[in-house]
Length: 389
Image (cartoon, rainbow, N blue to C red; front, side):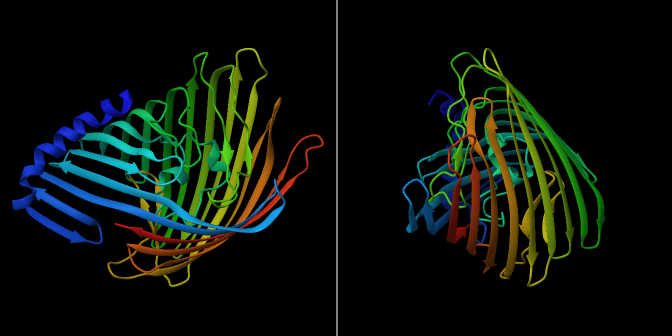
């Protein structure tokens, strides 16, 4: 609670100071939400609602074709800017067991293309994490993304230029757990560097590398867990709580290429955990995925972040997308028997417009465990209705 108060205090002051002017200032309601402008201050109120229905197996009980439906995300988002150099954002998630704060940050741009940001936000590590859940081609992120830090509380300095971006910062635990990940990650530095050596017509070639180093105190622990294609399905594999921690070092490498309506991406991530008394641990994951806009068009790319951001949709227009992914995660090392798993996912997405999307995914998963522990197979189908603004 103390960390939350510290992070939102300055943002709340700005918002409530501008509130009395709402009634007499310009208000715009469009596909980007509700925008209010008064002088140099601009506020936008948006949100996202993701409703899932899933059918899945439960290997622990032997049950098959279990059905369930629930809100995957129900998020209110407030963003704004003051002049051209100050921006902020506050997101609150209300769905699921990990409801809580997501983006809670304030940033300034003292000079063009250089940004200083502080608060709770996605650690600059993996482009899969940095891409919005509104535009990723699958209902859930890959098994390998389990090893990425996700959100963190801290500060960063980023810069970008013609076909490159760089970001580095210092982070501690996130304000709240998110997407099945615990908030605990230790204290330390993280950084990411991207390049776009080819940008010609509808062809783009992207490369990125990132790393982080965290340290822990004697009472902290860390855990990793992965789902089987839907948060409604049982957890596919988990490390359990890992204590006796000294430090964590993680790295990732990524490559992507787009040819007009086709986008192919690959990631590889590794995590090394040094422990005080116990043996050191090494976990790793890999992902290869491809998506195709069968209705034509191109994928949007942010050079400032070094991230593909889904289909480039014109106002009032839609798109149909097909996607496939192979993902692998290894959570077995030493005394940790989290399993060695793989998941194959096929999906179809119908973007009716910028605000509405219908998704259908099918995931086939398999996990092997050491010793005499039986392997796990799971099949998950999920459909999602998404509203975002």
